[in-house]
Length: 235
Image (cartoon, rainbow, N blue to C red):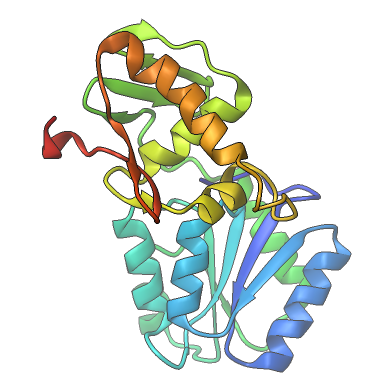
């Protein structure tokens, strides 16, 4: 999901030139942002789908698949984070190709860091693209904006952590989520991964989401983690 571009936001920089990546990371961190970096499309796509970024700065020329393809894959997965593409190519054709792939803006190298920051702020201000309002799987529904969730039309009373955990499951129905992935998404990266906090909260969630409705949709996958049963899988 896209967040507001403000101090403290998290930005992903996908850039294969190490020197440029370091320069961008340092400049954005000086503005108060947390910055992750990736040097190829594969790592960039993984990070972008694992984490909630406020914006992605994406180089076109990458060593595996290019920025156009990465952006297309993100949009196909309904990841609507604002994307600004960087390239050394100054042609109308490339700019059109980038926008067609789902990018929001285009910046040609060399560029000033002040211009990049201004472009990102502008993207966040006008980020009004349509996106799914509700996350839904069968009769289970969740609204990330209003922080409400329902099952079979009944509103669920969830704690903030329970809500975040349910949102994670609903964003990845049918996928097995490891405990470490859940920790990184719902808690913070410094959390003690050896604790049983994930198991406890999954049980809390089951008591509110499954048990009262006679359901068993939040499954334990032995030795791997947990999964929200996809509605298409049936009981």
